[in-house]
Image (cartoon, rainbow, N blue to C red):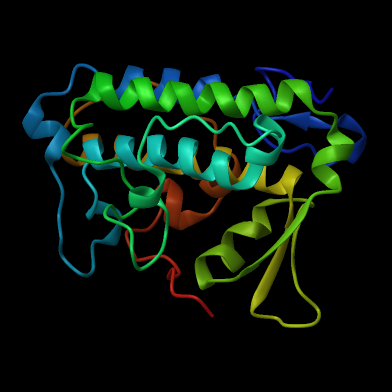
Amino acid sequence: MALIDANILEMPVDPASGAMPWYHHIADWIEAETLELSGEQLDFHNSSPEKEWMWWSCRRQISHIAWDSLVFTKRRAGHLLWPNGDVPEPINWVDHQMGPNNRWDRVLDTDLFWEVPDLLAKLRLGIGWLTQVVQEQPIEVFRSDFRTVRGTQFWNYVITTLPRGARISEEDQRDIIYDLEGSLWMVFYEMLSHIRTIQRLKLHQGLETAVALPKVGYLRLPHYWGETDENGPGMQRL
């Protein structure tokens, strides 16, 4: 089975380690940062075009992380979790898939999941799935499971934080080839970057942060730690 250690917070450079993320950190850090926020503090945001990092409120950040924990895990690791196709349905999958026909843009159904405890419950479910995957499968399975996706400027930027597991396709440089090891670390970094945005939104409101986040993954890049307020690379497909 893959190595899981709460003290390993970044993909080790040495592939012999075979370490995978400790996903429980994500739910614990979000809970610490948000459960005492008022409704006004949770919903504070700024829609100005030049303030992209502030477009989503703390509440929406939590909802997105919960969405990611469910939708990403089903899409990328569902064949390992439910090899017989008996996929549970904690949300309406059709409404939440990325694409032109979805009802919700990378967040959970706001009519059903609005309060922080409800969002955290869905997040912890997704974290449980991710944890099950890395606990049950050997690292060799992750390194032999490849997917090709059409890249974006954002993805081309953030895959530079991985020592392996993601690369630009030689056949079509608009495409990125991920193995599952890389994808599972990327989703950890993705969630972590949104927790950092929650912290930045709190600091902007004059509030103190609750957690000393590790500066790993995306957070090594200035756009996501907050060393600059400039908009980062875009999500439009190449």
